[in-house]
Length: 299
Image 1 (spheres, one colour):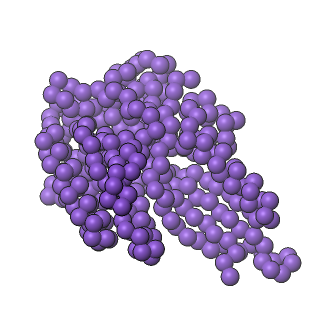
Image 2 (cartoon, rainbow, N blue to C red):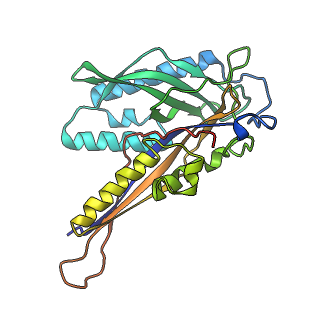
Image 3 (cartoon, rainbow, N blue to C red):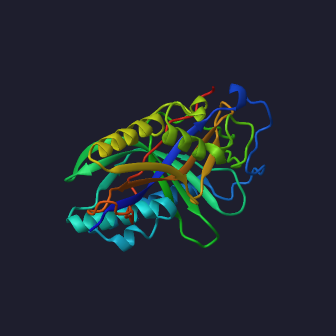
């Protein structure tokens, strides 16, 4: 008899970082100072359209192997879980229609190569258009000769900020340790986690705004905990970091757009049938559909 469940869900986050002091105070810390365009916008467009063709064909056929062939990291975990669950239920894999894409290609030399695409995506329900959501997709190629993969996709709950572009239309990538921002990009996840785990009274709430994936996620998990406790059970949650890559682009106001992923771990447990029995737990890892977090505002 299963007496406890521990589940971990993958959350894809998109955060807008403000510049320190609400205005740039230091030279931008770019990931590269090169003006080379080893990856061209035209090549990014071709890779994006190739992905749409392959992924739609896989969804139409319910072909899990093909559907997983052009995704990696957090997106692989989500696609794998989606195909597995839907196959078990006998439910068709969702298909999408995509609107006009906007490409953000960093001006960098060498590998890995990557780019972002902002695009309205419509879910098809029984072949008919359903909800349309603005979606951010991140693609990466680790080395020469390697295939492009979709590493992550997040549905947006707010408009993207204006991304800084050079005269040729290329974006500027940032280092994860860039210190000319309100928060360094590599501490965005832990800061979000502090609010999700502790709620609006957390000191981290002073630098991260309220929203569906910060205070909203805390409220949802806290309500679940209270409902579970009322049934004589124990429910706990913990937002944790992951080893998935994160991506950063400079915005026109001196801030940054940061794309990253986290794990939301939840535990539900109850006592055994016999009085005084120890707690028993079993583990189940089940990535959830992609979620998104709110932006960071100047404090």
